Length: 155
Image 1 (cartoon, rainbow, N blue to C red):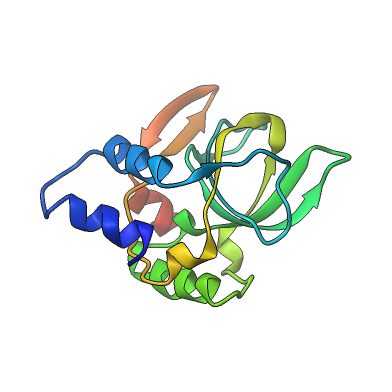
Image 2 (cartoon, one colour):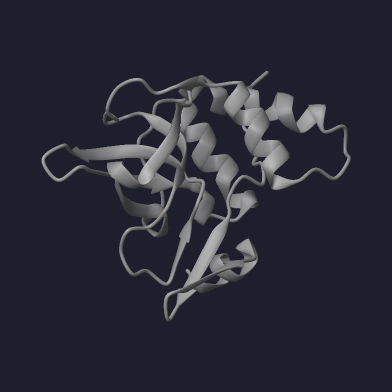
């Protein structure tokens, strides 16, 4: 089985908080002890450093580009897909694919990422989407949590 399926099964069909799911995922992963590399799949905490309309505070990203000079990496954050669409992408990642839909593409500043964990691609073999994302909407400097479904309907 995979990490994601095991965690889903451990919920035993009961309602759990997003923090509960995030904690379980982190406990099943190893912390990243080096700079990100192309091909890494990372789960981490993030605080946007630029003025964006919305962002995910807990991305799950396949890294496709690293720019150490500018302290950035970019890739596909699977959370920008509805859960029903995530499974196909996750299974492709398990098989070694480094692709994702364009709406998943984002750039991240390394200095704004913390609690970075490396997700083995094998964890996506029996991938089950978990509610790990937390989107924030920003207007006039005010940040407000927004339901994922609203973000998915905008992109």
